[in-house]
Image (cartoon, rainbow, N blue to C red):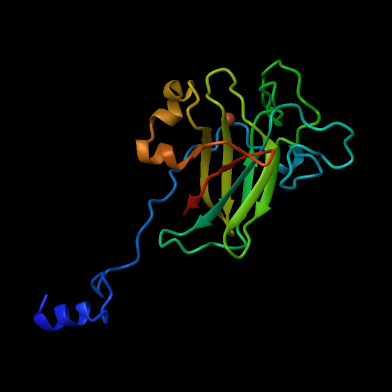
Length: 202
Ligand SMILES: [Fe+2]
């Protein structure tokens, strides 16, 4: 740095970072397989909103531990991505998916929507009300996630932070520790609401 720049910085006339520094780059959220149980339109309930606990017209709510899943979708420069469709799907509290191909013999929870979608707002936020995911044979608890613009931008899976089955889950194990941290849901009870925040970078 030349003496003129040093002097300008001392005078507070230059930013602390060199002018050539570019915006911070965030790591993209790791992709994961869609898996066999993405429900096609014909398999979904008529209600596909962001509240998977309550199906419209249904008398009974879903069984399971009710949680909120929220977060922000941004690009790698941390710019919020608005109007993106975010879809989630997961098995019910009995381990059954809303999918005709699921051979799990457990009874399906008719009160659980199983699939829902939300749109990101101007600041990139999405929100779902759902149940805390449970494990089923061969997998640690997880929520499947897809983010769309016109076509799929990202397909991934979120896991319960600190769950003992994570360490033996074949898909979770493939991720680096940084990638794992980025897709972990840490559920925190605040004002009677158990919520996890997972930001998505794509
Ligand atoms: Fe799954």
